[in-house]
Image 1 (cartoon, rainbow, N blue to C red):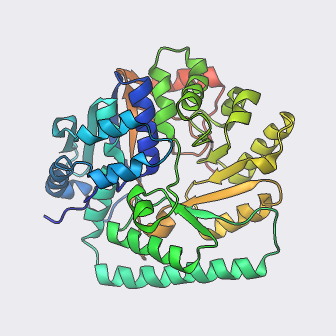
Image 2: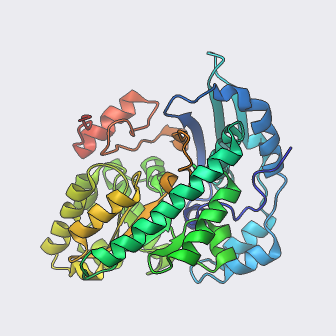
Amino acid sequence: MRPIIHSLLDTDLYKFTMWQTMLHRHPQAQAEYRFLCRNTPAFPLAELLPEVDEQLDHLCSLSFAEDELGWLGALRYMKNDFVDFLRIFKFQRRFVRATIAADGQTLEIVADGPQVHVMAFEIYVLAIVNELYFRRSDQAAALVEGRARLQAKIAALRAFGVNEPARAHPFEFFDFGVRRRFSGTWQEEVVRTLKDEVPEFFKGTSNVMLARKFGLVAIGTMAHEYLQSYQAFDVRLRDFQKMALENWVQEYRGDLGVALTDVVGMDAFLADFDLYFAKLFDGLRHDSGDPIAWGEKALAHYCRLRIDAHTKRLTFSDGLDLETSFRIHLHFADRTQLGFGIGTNLTNDVGLVPLNIVMKLTQCNGQPVAKLSDSPGKTLCHDETFLAYLRQVFHHAEPVAP
């Protein structure tokens, strides 16, 4: 068995930032996370079950090393008591199980237990399934193709820097590719190459281990699960976003100030994102729906609140490639600061069809939770009654595929 996860830092920064907030604000919460593959794989993922179980056994044997905790603790927004919690933390194997569905083809993975013990499984599980899946491909050919495509991206970045007119704000992008990477070693090669070749554009990575290794900025704030959890907490459902944002403000007091907008749609988010929050948060992150329409709504909102949009940042992270990022940048770069988190197209662009896999929060404290995406097909909820109620409360219509 060749371990895939060697360090518990080999995950997204926002898992730690959400984890700390939940430990401080809602340590008693219970949660369930479920794995899902949204596209058709080349072979049934159920075939990976024995290897997945081996990798999960290995994951649950790992602990944070003291030098890793020292690095985390040096981040000014990480609290001493959270670092102490991580010092004694180990994943509990009884809280995660992998099985084969009744159809005999589908791999099912469920993490269920205290939220502060199960919420971090997500990224490791996705990285494990991805790497096991792609180990069955022609590794050498994939790496040759991946390196050629990476060099083409570097050439495109340099050409963009030379040929496009100067804008008020520069083009900056980040690696967001842990969860759907071809392999851990390939992600490391991609990040190292971009850092060395195009540092004027490449500004960081969500991968905490690689940020530490290469001296990069670790990028990330919150994900959907953070806001979704508040749908099940002791607050009126209509006010769950406000409570989640308020808790974040109190936890980080000016740090990590990019808010995710699409848990119940952009319009419902902006209805809650009043002058108080708009001044306290540094910017917003897009993850579903048309990016240009979303950005225009964000800028119009700042204008209505008489906030100078040049002091704010719009971060885009929805299935991006460089061409799409360039297009969005040219549309907005004279009006606000921008950032682009690119995932699969950086770390799994090797000539093979990537898996579209997720591991989403489905229940919290025994109650269903949901994300009402602004993109068709990204809404996820196993309780249709709750989903309908959530749509009614937030006046959210199901997006129609073009």
